[in-house]
Image (cartoon, rainbow, N blue to C red):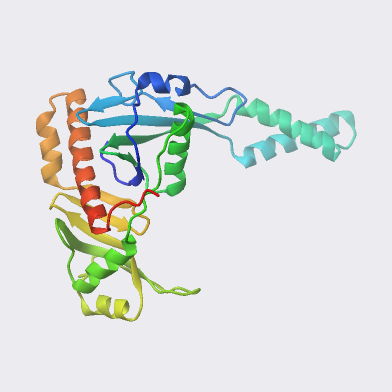
Length: 294
């Protein structure tokens, strides 16, 4: 349950969210003739509650079931049916009838199709919603579902006084980050213009002269590998999302020492993870000049 990819949303005002608030939007199995179904699911495997509280953090989970029905399966079944009718009734199948047959066959197959389930979690802490995805569309979808379930939700994407690309570029030019942040070994540099050149460095010394040369020639940093407080390694993106998050041994051992069973382990993990991510984000936002909520 350690978040590996993260999108951040800001809550301008405190909200009250509990299982009762989400009850009307609880997950229901996908109907036989529907392609998908989504709703809020139990937040933890050991509890039926839709919201799980651990210290100052709250967790929710959105479940989405999607039926798997390849186009080729529908096409093959349709072709077989068309051949059967043409041979048995000795007539041709027109376009309109073919479309009607396709619809009937799709409904028949859909009722028996395999279902793929996905779960996406989000955590509320310190005025933030931490969604476990760096994909903006997936993260926005969870917020949309939550907004509909609650009848409104004033969650917004984070905007800061200074652009993340600005501070990342400055840190690379300086050859060091500030505060509890340290440069790691990955970055992405992009030039300005319609045909922007992209330079990606992996497992590279980010203070090397060649990195500085690219920056001095006008490129900006859009992704930067960082380590925070010697505990969390991650890549900061220019939209303030975090990807490739790794929790170093100290944090994982701290959680393991708190948990003798599944419930206590997952509770401790949620507390330690969300508290440290919150501290990381708020420190980072401080260097970015703070949130701009208007």
